[in-house]
Image (tube, rainbow, N blue to C red; front, side, top):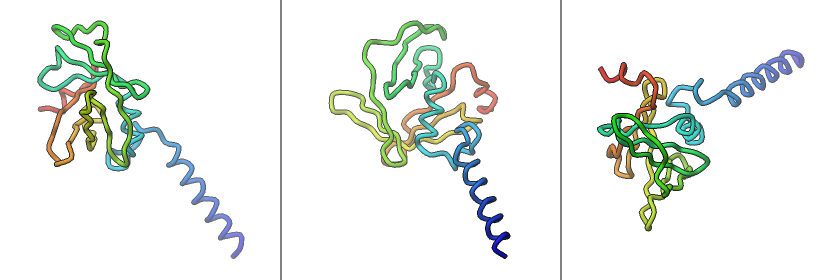
Amino acid sequence: MKKLIQQTLSALALVFFLFSCSKAEDQTPETLTIENKIEILEDGNWLLKGFEDRVMYAFKEGKRETFYGENGEFSQPIPATNDYFPTGTKLTIDLNFGNVKTYDVQLSCNNNIVELYDENGELNSTLYKQNSDYENCLN
């Protein structure tokens, strides 16, 4: 009986270890923490819905950079950045000048589409991962 308990505890410890060390891209959107979602945001550039060929964001080390472009060609980011950080289960972005917003981050389409919902549960913006197949999910 003691050996069975030890084996069961060992198996549970292994399962816990495997799931706690999995990467964000290996998890379903429902099981992602805000830290996992930030990791996904930091793993690419994001095009703003409705302005896909003119506005792009990059999330890097707590700073969101904004790029403006033309016909999908983007060069250097604008000089100003926006700080971002997790707040509980949400993403907070400091848009500067006392304008701080907190969003619920929803992922879909194999983490290629990000929707940001404000405090009232209203969709604020949708981002598409650059160079992904997000367009296949829109049909």
